[in-house]
Amino acid sequence: MSFFGKTGEYFILIGRAFQRPTKRSLIWREVVKEMDSLGLGSFGIITIISVFMGAVITLQTASNIDSALIPAYTVGFTARQSIILEFSPTIIALILAGKVGSNITSEIGLMRVTEQIDALEIMGINSASFLIIPKIIAAVVINPFLIIWSMFIGMYGGYLVAMFSSAITPEAYVYGAQFDFDFFSVTYALIKTVFFAFIITSIPAFFGYTVRGGALAVGKASTQGVVASSIVILIVNYLITQVLLI
Image (cartoon, rainbow, N blue to C red):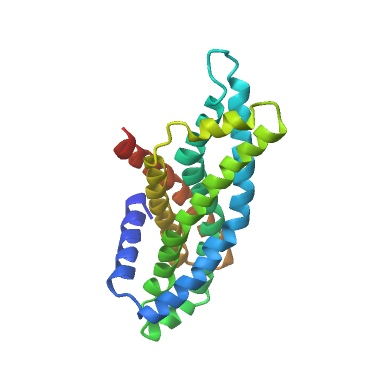
C-alpha cells in the first residue's frame, strides 16, 4: 500500500477508536494495566540510560571547554539544557518507540493473526477502542513522569562526574545547573512528551492491528512500526521546536 494509503488508513482507525469507545469500566481497567506495562516496565532502562548519558554529556562538555574565558559553571548549564530540552524528551522517546512500540505491534498483531480481534468484534466490542485507546491514555499519563525522572537522574549523573572526577567541581556544576533556569524549558519538554507518547502507542498499534499473515508478518510489522514512529517523532520534534522556541 502507498504512503498516502497507509496514512489514511491510520487516521480512519484512530477515528474509529475514538468515535465508538468501549465501556468506561473496561477502558480504565485496561489503562491501569497498560500504565504498569508500558510505563513502569520501562523505568529501569530509562534510569540506566539517563544516568550514564548525563555523565557522558557532562564529560564531553567539560572536555571541549578549554578556554579560560569560559566559566566552569558553563558545563552544568550546558548539561542541564541538553538533558531537559532534547535528551530526556526526544532520545528517551526514540528508545521507548523501540521497546514499547515493538511490544505493542507484536501483541496486537498476534491477536490479529490468531483471530482474537475478530472474536471481539463478534462479541460487539469495538476492538480498535478496546486495544488502542488504553495504551494511548496510559502513555500520555505516565510518560511525562518518566521524562521528569529522566531529567532528574540525568542531572544526577552529571553531578556524579563532578564528584568523582576532576572535570568540574560539584559547586560549579550545581551553580551552572541552577543558572538562569527557565521553567518553560520543562514545559516545552513535557508538551513534546505528550505528542511523542501518542505517536509511540498509536502508530505501532496501527501496524499490529492491520497486519495480515502469520508470525513472519507480525515481525515485519513490528519493525515497520518502530521505524515509522521514530521518523514521525523526529518530524514532530522539529515542528514543535519551530512553533514553541523560534
